[in-house]
Image (cartoon, rainbow, N blue to C red; front, side, top):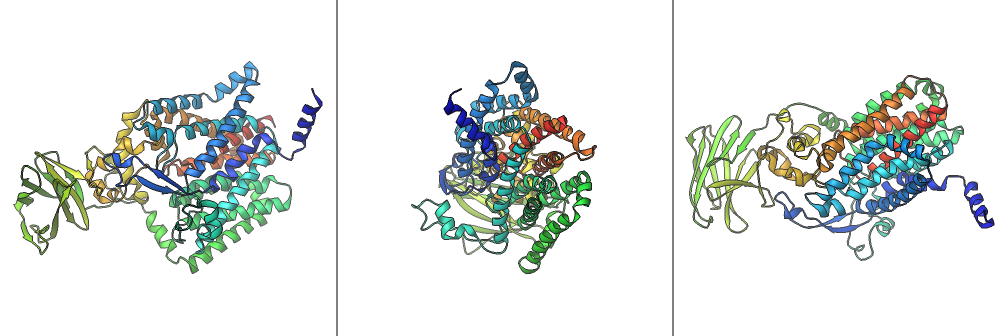
Length: 598
């Protein structure tokens, strides 16, 4: 070995951390923090369910995609080097352990090749930003972390990244809770916005929308579920008091950030994970009770002040949002398959028919029947608006307009809800508020009436679940959920109950998202991988006495993975959080391997 080579190796060995783990460190410390203004173009307006404009701006997602793509590329190179240096038996053992991920990669590639929108699957789409190379990066991240984390020194280095990322993101969220938005300062604009648009780009503070750097409050829950359990476990794994105190303070900050964000799913899952962690950590909690009391005092104190001084209606809104009850919607169903528009309103059958001229622009006749009785129609000062008096005296209205400048449309409005339809030929069609024609598909009947549960997610799930069977082997493609579900068009009644306000470009369910985008079989292989890991953790941590610092870190990683998957029942995978989940999963697997040797 040359003298130059020996000197290089000695310098690397003297570093206080493993330089090969810098990419994993950055996933926790840097990726969630990155924010950069980006102006993009979406293909959504080309589809029947799409928005009206192709242009959009992004502050939260695109920059994170770029940074993670670079980190994942470095991880891929390091992973290839590591794999090339392995013995044959070691390679076979690795492939045996990670075969579900290899199958997942195959489905990612196939779903991208046969994607319903290949451009979106390759480049990413607005408000989704998980194209194929990001999904591949997730798999690379878990394998890389598992192979390169070898000892407690490596674990400590990764944990430092978790503490840094948790502190920065939660600190920004907490100052937002108290009405200050760092994104609207000169420094914030200089860091995030290019000079060409910096003078007129404004991001005003909104204390009712506390997201820090995480795009949406829905992702605060998954973020805290990953960072909090590991930060909390560091309290019991460090020997120095200042390290324990630092981990405790950051844990308290994450707790306050979660409560302030009003992430209802996150709060519910947090309670369940807290119970699990209390069971596993009962002995050190008793031993270091003063630190736990300190965490609770800081967290409850900050949040108590916030609720009493800044947001007095917080608890009432949270209680109402967590209710799971069937709603009695006035619009039961809307059917356009016959020779009329048939609306079931409060159990009554409203039938609307009309005739137009050959160009479909002039109204010749209009008849509205309520349970078979002809309704009275009166004109108003505005000739385009007509009033209806139903058989029981209740009032409704029909507003005339043009679709695409050539088709006469009617907006039937009742109970402050409206549905717009038009007659083309002998058929009636329903249109979105962007004047896009939509088709009718079956929705999932078990969720009928529960469309408003979990902040309206029930309606989206009801639209999406039936379409999963169309994508058993090959999915619709990464970032192609709305293409696969025809978003607004699956159930007219669901649409006007609330889903018609916006286009649900995401299913708000990690498992539906994966099954739709890369296929149900890919979802099955990932579930097998997750269950293997969790079962391994339960054997190591839930039925044994603590045997060292790594025990607590391993248990913290277990809680983080379970917490993320728990929030995944009501939230999507997203670039703002998911990279940290996959690295945490790899870290947990590596710690499990080390604990088995003890």
